[in-house]
Length: 238
Image (cartoon, rainbow, N blue to C red; front, side, top):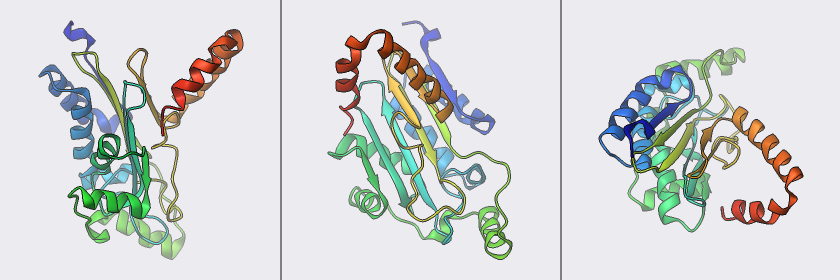
């Protein structure tokens, strides 16, 4: 397989260093899933990146608690894992991968997600460690002045295609600033915030899925005999 078939993609300009790191790892022959998990975890654990609404340093919910969502999906159909409303874990994508590999379920939320992580050796940190000075200050302004967050982005998505043709996508977010506790957005949901299929490709971000949905509707309208096949394909996700 030619080196030109390697690919590394990230959403938003702040992901450029992460994409370059992915590129180097892929050229060194590393597996797509390992690359996405490793680089995503580095982004999540960087408090400076938190102002982009990702991982450590992310904005808390309206009670002041940081809750993170993350998901990972491989191009082999059905290989998916996610966590949502996860507290105290600065690298939720690592827990999402464990859900994909070790849980009979595909998505764990809240206390259940945290308990699952702890059972596998992850350490839950105090909420103060999850906040940065920037986001703690923003939260105080929200409490005192009802000041909303301006600018920034709300999720990071990374896609890696390795030299063996494996493709993996991951997403991570600390969610809408000052959201209701327990709120889960579209990011960790397959077909909403991410999707991967080794026969076609991968995507991260809701705008892409609007076009995907339109394409599928047109395809099934023109070829209704594909409906049973599509149904079996998508319900393989637990």
